[in-house]
Amino acid sequence: MGVIHPDSVLHQVFRFSLFILVGVNEAAWFLYRHYVAEIPVANNLPLHLCDISVFLMLYTLVSKRSWTGELSYFMGAVGALLAICMPAITETGNIRLIAEIRYFITHIALVGIGVYFTFGRRYFPSYSAIWRSYGFVHIYALFITPVNVLLGTNYFYTISAPQQLSFLFVFPHWLFLIGASLIFLVIFNVLYIPFFLNRR
Image (tube, rainbow, N blue to C red; front, side, top):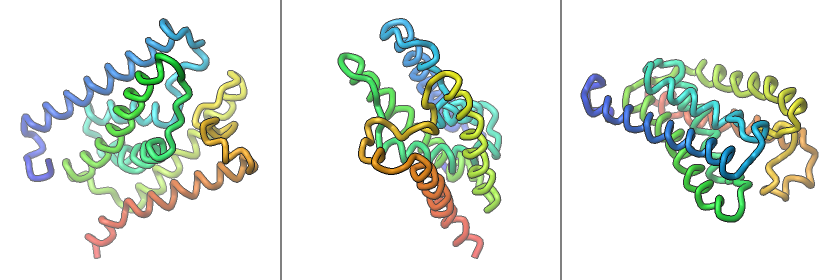
C-alpha cells in the first residue's frame, strides 16, 4: 500500500472495508453476549485496552489522523500481539468458537491497521510517540482501575491477571503489572527500530 498514492481508491476501499468488518464484528459480538448469552452489562462493556484500541482504530480509519495512527502502531499493535500470544478467552460451550473468531479478527486487525497507517500511509512516528503511547496506556490503567473496583470487574486486568494464565497467580499482582508495563516499553522501543535506523 505504501507504493500506491494515499488518495487512491484502493486506500479508500481498504479503509472502508476494514471499518465495516471490524465495526460489525465488534457490535455483533457485544450484542450477542448481552441478548443471547445474557451476560450482565457491567461484564460486557468494551473497556479492555484492545476495545479502546478498536475505537481509536475506527476513528483513525475515518479521520486519517497521524496521532491516532501512532497509537494504533504502538499501543494497539503491542496490546493485540500480547493478546494473540496469550489469548484470554473466558467463554465456554457453544459461544466459544464465536468468541475465538471474533477475538482473532479484532486483534489481527489491530496489528494490521497499525502497520498500514505507519508504512502504508507513511505516518512515520517520532521517538516521542513511544512516550505518548506509553503514557496513554498508564493513564487508561489509572482510569479503569476505580471503574473495576466500583463494578467488580477486571478490565485491562488491573485487578488480577487473566484467569486463563493461572501460572501468574503464584506471583503478587503488582509484579504482573510492572512486568506488563516493562513489556510495553520494551516492545514500543523495538517497534521504533526501523525509524531509528532510517534516520541514522
